[in-house]
Length: 177
Image 1 (tube, rainbow, N blue to C red):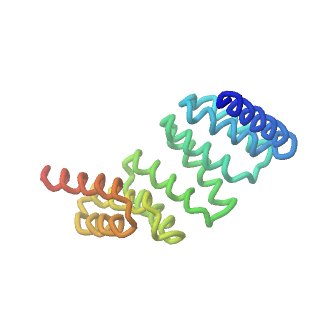
Image 2 (image 1 turned 90 degrees about the horizontal axis):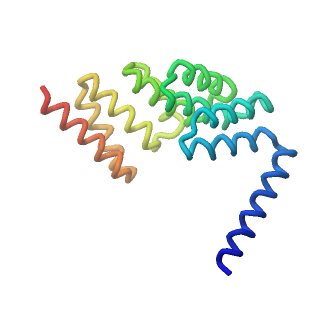
């Protein structure tokens, strides 16, 4: 009976997405891209995110997902280009700036990591990932006091995992000097 219920749910879900494809092709392709991204099939995911953007050149979730996917593929410049386009479509979406900050951290450009983390925090000061990225960039620049302040902010917003990661980075940096 449980298996029958699961199969029925899958059938209904697939039918709903088939209808969604006709009504909202951009969100349908974005859904497919996300599905492949979770499977770590990033090239196929990127293909579907690009299809979503072709269907609706202003569909922001596909831009964000495509930018993140390029970041995971280590095509950082392409990821930055896509996320910058997303910020032009809507400059008030914190996820765009968080992901730009994360890509710049991977590129070891800590000044831009800080700039974009601060843009995200201007939209939501409790964004744990932006606080972490800001603190991490401060550590890499040797600004330990600023990094400790970010650690405190992470603790205050109850982001224990990110706070511990940042604290470990601060301690590692301090012991390496």
